[in-house]
Length: 356
Image (cartoon, rainbow, N blue to C red; front, side, top):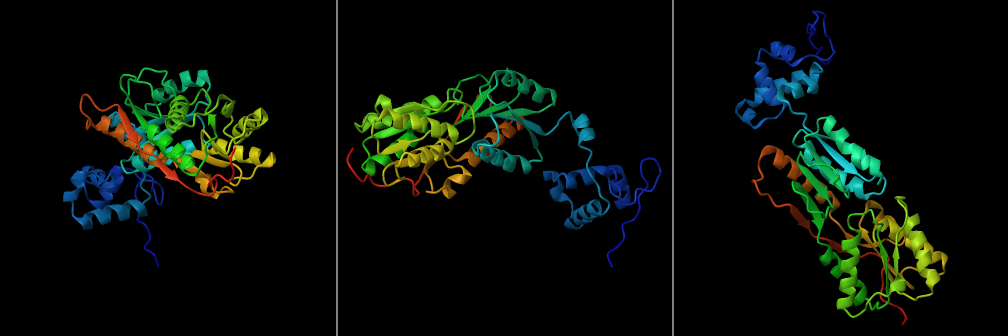
């Protein structure tokens, strides 16, 4: 039979039984100091000198007696909350959630937590939410594809940020390389008439992605005609915006054999519009996305795309904030951290089948 937990008197003198106990009570139960318990339970480097047998006793007793750390009391004593704030446009598009996975992976190993706030591209929330996070005593802020409209009094890292702001570090994709890979792939497949879906005005990556794609096409002497450029409209995180923009492309009557979409979500919408118009993907029109969200590989056809290392970008952003908080970064830290794209070839692109 399992050993029954020993009852420990509560703070009010009552028997705590299986209820939560304090660090002081747990230390008394084990006959150890609260300092020793704190070092072991918080996995501090200085706990390396404590015998493994003692550590096992501490963790075993903490589990058996239902010890739960009082984070509020700890924060008040140390004047630290070990919490970051994360600003995102919204969470349903796959992009933000993949970045957040990287943030969480980096923070969990350091005992940090994060609060997420979605601004939905609304001006009032872009002004209000940073203040709310600061009022909640976050120690730093990670912005994801979000304009910085507040004074960066805390460490701030912006994923896909392109504005140079004092005190803000930007984690950015090498868009020139991405455009070269994407347009180069379509060119090598024989495509000379390429349409482009430009992102919405509110996205941080819209202009740089569009301009680098145009440049890569011009360098191959296949300039993208004005009728083959459509901008996504609306703030829905849905394939609908790509669907609507592609319908407009089709209505112009301008022929094209490939389409380079702003992101994977709009590429999925584009495929639906093309198929409704009687065009097969990729037999009649090749479609390329951008980001490589989780659903890209499972769409039919599986989406050829330009992978942003979104998980790594989130992890890098979190690690950068932690380094600033710990003083690991010098007085003049690098403020632009660049990551590289990867071309992921699947079934939505193919060699051009006919001249246009």
